[in-house]
Length: 177
Length: 177
Length: 177
Image 1 (cartoon, rainbow over the protein chains, first blue to last red):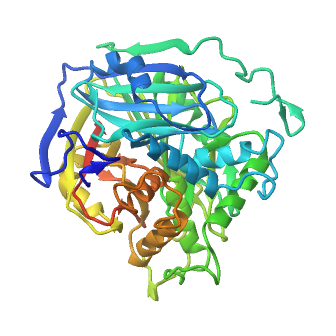
Image 2: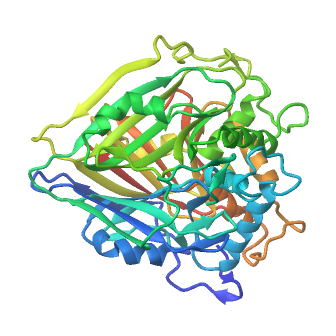
Image 3: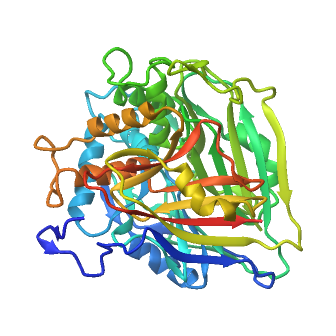
């Protein structure tokens, strides 16, 4: 990972060097007195324009308190739509999100040259369905010591594939101990 | 979401408008008397032609009774093959499934113009492997109040990427309380 | 599945024919005396060249012993990076991995003809981010009777999308009984 990123030196807390190939962090919870916890919540994100959006902070605002109660577990996010997607990608430079939208718009034909039969919901609808399956509508992220255990540069993206923005519902399920 | 879909007005139970951006539904189960349940079952779907197939009802026929016993949990589906895929997409218009197959056949080269080294299992085999990784072989879906908590228009698709149909095995794991 | 694969007859333990469409294997664990187990470990894989790499044995070396303690459960793998990916695909012929890299390099433009704004980390960086979302950074695999319950021909791939190799961290979470 080069040290320059958009002309800005990356923050010093980036894991540029790793001291060992095996990280000794290991948590085993097998306590007969402990009981598993399940929490489930439906969060609705406000309408956003077509493109890729970093929504980590919006998600954490909704579930951060619940996550803090888990020593070890998994957070599952499920987008209840077929024309948007959830993915994990770069959390720093918005150009990465713009370029990803550029890629999606190029790789899936849209408009008069597109071969789609399903066109009655608009020229952007069938491409949106395809993009939804390309990136997927579901994510599972580890929870460690009360926090989402993502990499330094990772963030949660909601990718809106329709031209007309609508609210998007995400069912979030937390499981752990 | 336009009200016209293939010339038919979408059913009135579609979530066309959402009253609030935050859905208050929240379930927390942390009962020391409750014990977690795990159920695992291998389901084999019959051979289907190349293309995308809606298999929600076939899956539910196999696991619906077990799912009904979970108040809150997750259903995990794992396709044990490398030339087919599982994805979640539109459950209403079969044109969406046909168009998705059209996209996959266009984006992954096949036949004499394709650059593949791996050709001994037929011209459709290497493209099938690529499509399997594009859409993936695994899905996790929330369970809420004894049902799969998918969106109104979502369904489970099995995408068969080989020309010659074979049975496809799915390991289904249910976990919850 | 043809019997010839690279000129070699596939081993006789391949599930070429399936005797029934419904496999009766079913495990239900709902024992109040049993307690759920959670194990979480961060594994760092050594640097590997750009391309797709079969890492099943490396992963199993790190978590095989822990997995053997689970009768039924799920193994979750989470790659903490945005320019590499995890996927499940063919475990036998390395040509499949080479061809997949060929596909990825073709489908995502790179170099002077590419339309990317995000270029300061090198011409391979933005394509790497896109490929990471195409294949994904997370996998969930069923555990049955102490083993990963993958299909005969399935293996875990780490796909390195950068030209310069770096170590890659994977958070592995095991949950089951």
